[in-house]
Amino acid sequence: MKKVTCIVIVFMSAVLFCACTYAGNGTEQSVSAKGQFKYKDMVSPNEKMVDQLVTKTYSDEELDKIANFRMSSLEEVNEAYPIECFRTFDYDFYEAVYVGQKRVVKVGFDKTGLCCYGAKYELKNTKKDFENLKIGDKLATVTELDPGGDYPFLYSNLSETSSHCTTDGYYVWIQYGISDDMQSYIVKSIMFGYI
Picture 1 (tube, rainbow, N blue to C red):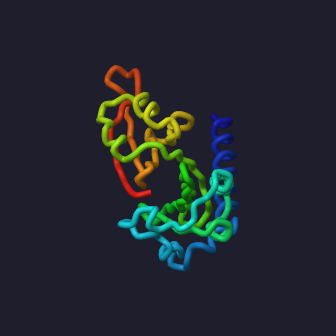
Picture 2: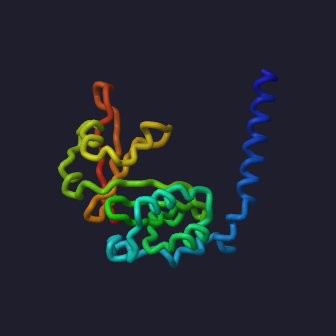
Picture 3: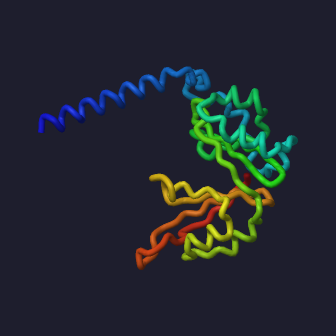
């Protein structure tokens, strides 16, 4: 019992150390004194599609570089690749969108302005293609439709959702559950928004 208690204390100390180190990494300058994200004014209007906001089309090479810009600040990313389309869903998390001929890259930032990820999407389907999916369809049907979609739950412990971008400017979120026979993932809900 004492050994378990010591392990828990050591683990919690390490977590506290990491949290304090992370909090002091210099990214806090993006949050104002009131705790508001200082880039809130950069957020693009929700009623505008990405093609109404962006003026630059990036090459595949540039999109690969942008997608790998992790652990940088929003300022660094914006300086290297000016943000023209900036989305949020809850003002705790933000995404910059960069467009190529047949690909889109979304770069995610937390409310401190720290770049958390870059996701690449191949553009090959339309919104209508995804509207043809039905609740209860198997995951295999979705992966056949869009093998280039993002399915993080298949390789990590994240929630059972996938995300997709369409050629006509939509972002698609699909939530999955387990089938009644416990043999496969099935579609539980499909939501659409603008890229």
